[in-house]
Length: 248
Image 1 (cartoon, helix red, strand yellow):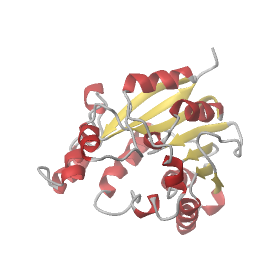
Image 2 (tube, one colour; image 1 turned 90 degrees about the horizontal axis):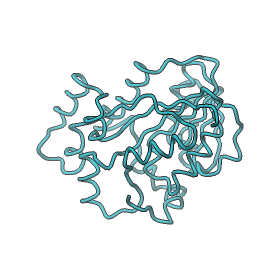
Image 3 (cartoon, one colour; image 1 turned 90 degrees about the vertical axis):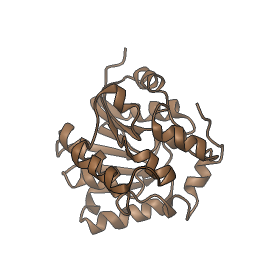
Image 4 (spheres, helix red, strand yellow; image 1 turned 45 degrees about the vertical axis):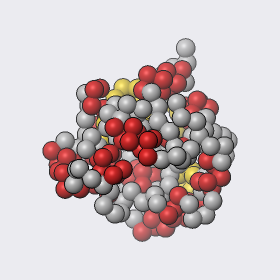
C-alpha cells in the first residue's frame, strides 16, 4: 500500500491548494461525481430527522444534499478555506441554517458531538495518513444501527494502476478491498453494499486519449454504477454503505 507524505495534512490545510483543483460539481468531470448522488438516491433511504456528520466536507456537496432532505448536518473539514466555500454554497442553496461548519481533523473529531445517525466520509479515505484511527473515531460517533457512507479507490482499479504509474505524488493512495473491509469490521462497521462508479473514466482522466469524453458520459446514462464485485473494484471510485453494529 502506498504511504502518504507526512505533510499531507499541511497540504490540505494550506490556502490555495485543494481549492484550486477540487470542484466536483463543475467542469467536464461533473458527470462522474453525479453518479455518487445517483447511487444514494436509488439505494439509500433518508429520514428527515437524522443528524449527519460529514467528514471532509470540502465544498459542502454532501452536507448540502443531506440538509436539503431535512437532516441536521455537522460539516467538518481541515481547511478553513474549504469551509468558507462550503458556507457560501450552503447559503446559495438556502440550507445554511441546517448545517454547522466545524474546523477539525478526521483523525481527532473531539470538537463534534456524538450520536449521529449518519457519518459521511466521501473522497477522503484516499488522503488519510492513518485510516484505522480515522475510522475508529468516526465509528465512535455513530449510534448503533447508524449508517457509515464512504468512498475509496481500489488498488485493483484501472484508474489507480494508471494514476500510480503517472504520478509521483504521495498525497493519495488506494486500498486493497479486503484490507479495507477488515478495518471497518474491526470498528463494528458492517458493509452492506459496495458500488463502483466510472469503468471507462480512468483512461480519459490520465491520458485524455483512447476513450473520448462522450463515451464516458454515455456510460452514465447506460450504466451509472456497478454492483458486481468484479466490476466494482475495477471502477475509478467505490462507494460503500455500512451499518454500525453492536460492540462484540
